[in-house]
Image (tube, rainbow, N blue to C red; front, side, top):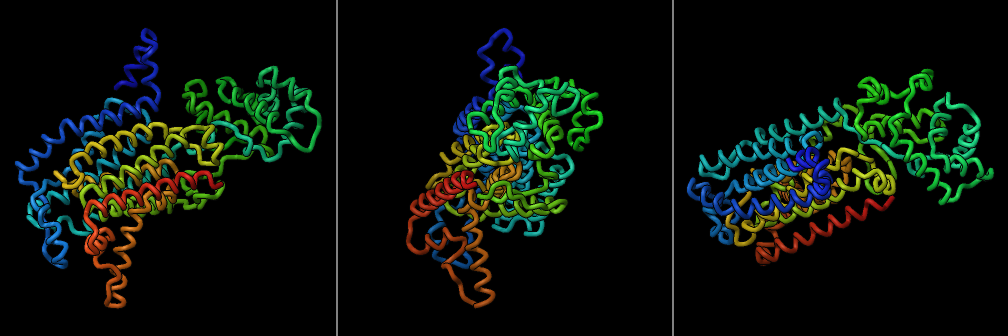
Length: 494
């Protein structure tokens, strides 16, 4: 709402322009979601208690654990609805809903939250810990992943360059030589068209450059700055100039919608594609089908092609993320705090990949539309902090599957939409460890008849080893923070 009000009123009130910046709106969304959680949290908890929506603590399997947790019986659950509600209200105020990634992230969070809500509701009706069957819960998770995967494959989002960086030029001496030659020609060819649109000072600078086998960094910066200005123009394309030049399907699609009607970002993207066609042997082209490729963390633009199997990859990732958070939700505040850390990491990543300069510098896939994911991530962080106020030990409310599936869905979706899917293994390292402990425990018992841990997931093992609940939670939060810091450091290892 504030974004659109700012757009409407900024001609009369210039200071309102600040509300069009996604960084300002991200801060506003975080504070708003946090405040809403604190304000309505007590009322939500009272309502859940009045409805007798309380947690059931099972006595089977591990008597020692029941003795530790029996005091939690009756604590209101389904508190994850507070996270979802606070996030949605904050986004209604601060979000820009013309952004597809924001809508996808909100939709995935709500859809998976609905699956969790249904599971919690059935548990409460039965007054037992058995809710949806495993098959039914998986079906809901798979459906969510399927919808997102199919959309991303058949309605690809722009995961590509809208600028030009030094690494995009295959050979700088060849580039300078080609530019020097084109300054002598009329702007009737694509390469000459770009050269003649460069600022006059840059053209003179190129003309005076001596022939050399190397081009120093200062010269590169000056030439690139000139091309950045050209890419920002809205008069680069001329049908007569590009008449006999083959264009990519993406460029043709953008031109079909009308060159004059393109948004500034679409215009920059088209100009970048035209630049690639003007200097096909010199300017590195955007990898084909990049929307179905997955980047390997730590390696410079090493992409794994999935093709149509990218849909299956999205399903696996989303199911893994939601179940990872769900398994971690066993102690007061544990899953909430760990999720906040992961969401903070991906909010920062979304900001980086949405910027052409930073993503270019770090050799990351540029995702222009990811700017709005910073607002979404900030809103989720604010709502999570507000919920943690009541969920910290001793918890006044539990998130239930409503919250754990919603949080897992939000984290997994942000990983997918920022094109940092495999980095989730590190960002959500704590969830991976918790999930692995369950798999190891089950495999060991089936194959050897022995358990590796006193109980799985891992947090219960340390609880039964004598650690207090607060100590387990805080130490696991520290682990989550270390994993998140490792993931951010990995962005530079290229």
